[in-house]
Amino acid sequence: MFLWIRDQKWLPTLYLGLITILVFGGSDYFLQGPLALVAASLISLSILFTRSLPWLAIALTSAGLLSPLFWNLQPQVSQIGSSVALLILSGFSSKIQRRIAFIANIVFGFIAYLVCIGNLSYGNSLYGVQLPTDSSKIAFGLLGCVAIVAISANAWFIGRYVFTQITHVGSEVDLANLESQVSISQLNLAEQNRRFGVARDVTDLLLEKVSATMVQVESGSYAIKADPSVANRLLESVSSSIREAFSEIRRLSDLLALQESKSLALPGIRDLNNLFVTYRELGFNVNFRENGQSIDLVENASLVVYRIVSETLSNVRQHAPSNTGIDVDFIWTDSALQILIKDNGEETLKANSKDSSSYTVQDDQQALTERPTGAGLTALAEMVKLYDATIEFAKVPGVGFKVSAAFPDVRKYAKAK
Image (cartoon, rainbow, N blue to C red; front, top):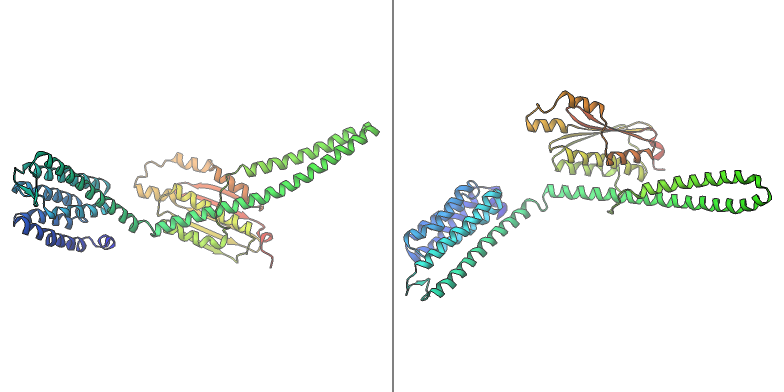
């Protein structure tokens, strides 16, 4: 039903309003007479306008709750319809409108009910229930107030819950966000596996160097006893081994100091199309072009290429508005690969704000003279060095951001056939 109400503003609420006046209004007519139809009509009209004119719907609901007081009528069955109006308002109106609707339902419901209870004289009844004493009036009043709060709160929460379910859960944006998180997790696991592999290799190398140093020290101690002149040569050899070991330890320490996470699998160039679809669903105009014959790279090299694109798109999403255009170009030659990624985030931001006065010549000069820095950019630069590649980051004044990566000898990382 909520999908029907969401897609059509008038027809669903018209049917709900008619049902309210026929069922609830008809009950009031038989119980209290023709005057009871006034409040029922106001409540039904409020349901009709919940999607198109929320403020009018709130006003009509409030009037429908208070109108029985002017004709000394008892609380009406049709006033239950105010909860139907609140349920729709809580799902489709703005935050301030649904809050005011919730408060109005409770406040005016309290007033109408308590005034009715207070005006009952000795011997009168409320829908057949005798209230002979003040204590019974108070008890019945409290019970009614609790019921009003409970019904209104349930209408509010059901409306918000159903709206969230049909609007966000399983939507294209929700799936795109999930795909983005999966992609990030894949990268993190791939990076973790790479670090573990390097750490294992460095550890084996360290064991060999430490073992060689121990042999040098043990054999040198005997050599010094026989010929003290070999001491200098021994110290130089041990010192050189220690320096090499220290260099490897520093490399291992820097590697393991990077942030580590876990995830699912190793992504690569083959997964780029899914990544582009994800960002298109998020509102970015991604345009991918590939020139030349592509080379099937080994897993680690393919991961590096994927990560360059992924990190760049993530940076655009963080700093640029939706509708930003992103051009991704892969230029393959016989033995090289160049990756160009450009966006017009700054241009889009200015177009959205319709204010170009904030951009000055100093901004152009700053973009031309200062190079972008950051932990993520530094990590990418260090990563591509492992594959004899280079990467550059630059701001294009007044337009956006550009990333250029070059793999001059990418063929040596091709998969063996």
